[in-house]
Image (cartoon, rainbow, N blue to C red):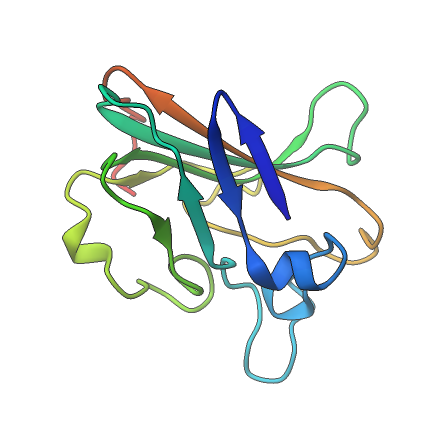
Amino acid sequence: MAAQEGGMRLVSHPIAAHDGRLPRQYTAEGQGAKKDMSPPLEWYGVPEGARSLALLVQDIDADPIVPWTHWVVANIPPATRGLPEGFSGAAGAGPGRDQLGGLQEGVNDWKQPGWRGPVPPSHGHRIQFKLYALDDEVHLGNKG
């Protein structure tokens, strides 16, 4: 899975290796002890002058008008080059979180902060990952 937005490139190797589908450990269905954890992400080409990054993950097939939001992350420091597997979700506070300063996770459409993967029978739904470079920080209004 890779996305190109304004010169930035967003990549998740496990998703790319599964033909663009989320492997089971990133869904609510899970795989053994691993389930509902955020996938690893890497990005490149952050524009100079960006003050923060924001990530939005949505199921664009859940509703034809309003996509279902799985994850919102704001105030990612622009020097950050990715988020590790299990950074958010059922795995809890993921590795490296304490080095990311004012990063905030927004409330998803389950009314919870952080990652929450798709719930079956959402097989075949397209999950869209978008990364934005911002010229300021965002205040989400929650403590996540």
